[in-house]
Structure formats: structure tokens, C-alpha cells
Image 1: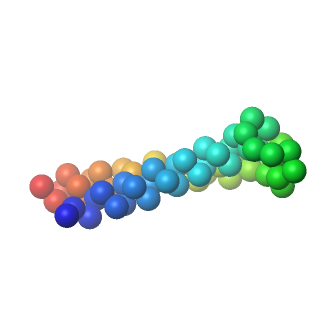
Image 2 (image 1 turned 90 degrees about the vertical axis):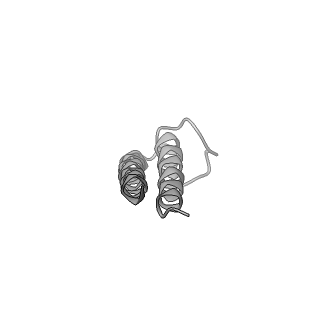
Length: 68
């Protein structure tokens, strides 16, 4: 099994978490009682986590290509 697939999976999960954090910071998703709800800091954190997830997906894709 290629090492790329688990890394890509981790990247996708990280991206999804970042998206959820970003949407909670924008008051779109989540309960109003959450400390992340309507908090502009979490918009920034979510974007940073999404970018990290994209980078991890890219690394996994490169590893998958190099393995062939």
C-alpha cells in the first residue's frame, strides 16, 4: 500500500476541520453557545488549518506519484 493514501486522508480531515472552524467563526454553523461561534479569531485559525490540510494533501499526492 502506498504511503500517500493515509497522508491524503489526514489532509482531507484537516481541511474539513478547518472549514468547520471557519464557518463557526463566521456564525454560519454550530451552536450559539460555542466559544468559536462568531469569534473572528476562529475564522483565521480555520483558514490556516485549511491551508495546512491542502499542503498535507499535496505532500501525499507527491509521495503517491513518486512511489509509482
